[in-house]
Image (cartoon, rainbow, N blue to C red; front, side, top):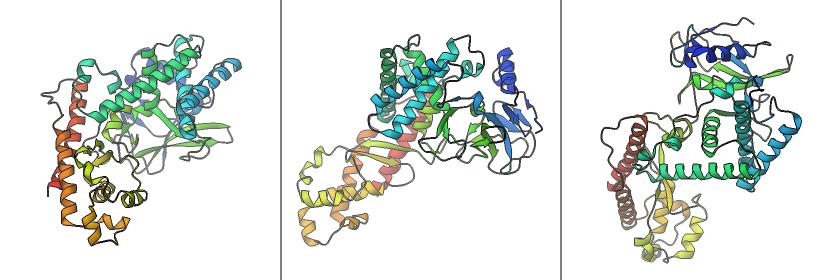
Length: 418
């Protein structure tokens, strides 16, 4: 198989370390296989036309950190660390089997990266020293944190920090020493941001046999919701080796940037996981806490009947609902029509069913719903702090998050005000 160079790629890592890293990646038996000429200019660019479904490069999973094994550790140490990861995940996740599996894999990779960073005898993986955390809100300075008006962003930061602290405390109780709380937080961010999950023998198929992988070069491909490349797993049985497969999703012209999809995520999640945001993100949404204290007199009216209807809905938390940028939460609208139904209205139309509330049931009912939502949206809008002339990436990101949320609120306010 003819291999071609990745021109200028070492500039992304710089210095001798970057050159050693590429040399390590290309060590026989050809752990890095590049089938298309690629140019690097703060990202990956096609140096020639690449046809749809053509392979661009393969990276052996032996050059990755995976949740399957602890490469370079002796058997006793490997079993000890795997047991610690499983026990911590079970304690944190309880009976949630899939979440427990994912947390176990995450912890196993974090501990591997840590061991390879600290133990100079494990020289086979310089990749460990190059895994860097993205600039996410978890590492923002306190001066920026103090300016956060978004309750959603604040709760995401708080919840993630608590999760990290719990994992770190459990590692300390398990006598995994030498790792500070800040080092663990950075490793958690770095690993979670670059984690991909698939079964190399069954690409894109997730089950309890799926492998979690942190792979070199993934972050050289920028994010796009309409990417021109995709990642798969492939297994070459004649070589008994598995690879992370980077292939073209569609035809790519010379000079085009190579992109993959980090996930169809809102800007909140993209910022928390990867330290990036997307303009006009179609997946943006935000939760809003609804205050029913002023509408408590509607709770007791038709209580049993309303409960019967609501048991047919998918709503689990009536006080916390999501709002979207370009569409209305129809489930929320249906729920509020039920909530504000009065005994007098029901007596006029006793044949109402759950699906009846997908449409307006009366002018009076619709007015109550609109007034309720308008007041709640205005209350949230009044809490935002103004950020004038944001300087620096953290303030610009915070400004963007708050602008996204205020756009969602304004769009919904316009709808309910009509």
